[in-house]
Image 1 (tube, rainbow, N blue to C red):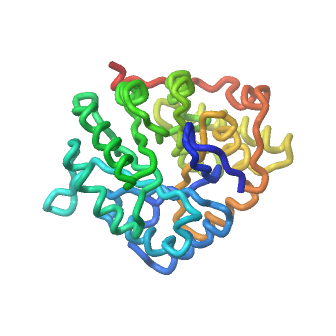
Image 2: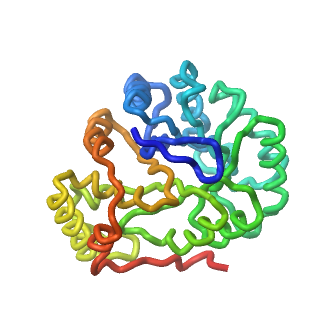
Image 3: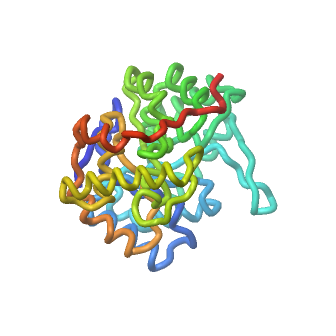
Length: 301
């Protein structure tokens, strides 16, 4: 598995990583096997959140990866608090909450430190400087190594990029969803890495029937799929290789976090992982040809 440096840190992460939200039900035999097999395939970056299944997801990851803790990069998130009904949650953005909540994540993950602690969302109305103080304090205490942001709000991303020492931003990025590129110049100047989610565009660039996607019509999605098929045939690789290589060819993208739910999906990834390549500018342009580029429309100021 190829690896890349996560922004301006000393963390080296696998180009393909595991997004844990798809693994539901806690430490089942299937979930355990998926995590273990992903690790043996070279995945070393695992992304979870305290929100996922009210902490069970973190607990599962801690149990499975504890024997190889020093060989993996653990990323989790904070900022959402479950309500007493057990079904809904609310945004909880404060310095005391972050400092308190990290202890539960450390315990569930069975570790003394978290490699990457991410704010799970964020609003421009938050006490941003106070939240930054919380993350910086946790770094000083050695409870986290680095901190980042998981957000799709341009105004929030800009605020943290300009005011905090964030290592990364986790956001959607794919051939169909290039909205993140509007923020890339700022992130590049600040040496902030991108953790891409949604790289497979819900499978619409692979084997699912064409459908509307964000602001794109199904006909536009079908057009993009044909471009992918054409380049895959030309290069003699499968379509998943092209879809993932497109995302990872951008030098800002450190890793593509994929949601894997079955062993079959994990096994389907193996050829693509082996064939990952940096697409040339001309190859990227051929994929983008005739495809409308989306832009963020909310949370701009």
